[in-house]
Amino acid sequence: METYLKWITSFIHFHQKRHPASMGNNEVEIYLEHLVLKNNVAPSSQATALNALAFLYKHIVKNELSLNLNFVRSKRQAKLPVVMTKDEVKLLMPKLTKRYNLIAGLMYGSGL
Image (cartoon, rainbow, N blue to C red; front, top):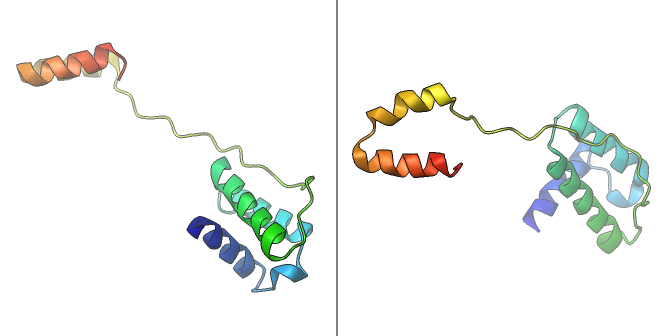
């Protein structure tokens, strides 16, 4: 619920503290596009913001949003983890003590 409140508050402040009942689909679309185009939010963040606003309009304002909202969807790529190259692993393994070499070898060999 705390997350929904954060997104709802952000939405209201974005629209100069206008009451949500005086706004609708158009303002929601503008806000969701702003999140992507100006703040570069992840798809999951944009989806959470949309869910929070849908909850607000359905349960609080009692005026549901359209199911056909038209806004730019986030396509930000997930960040890939940094992975060591084979050469880096070859340099690292001999520097480990026997105990840690065994642990690291098992983890590396199993793909962890």
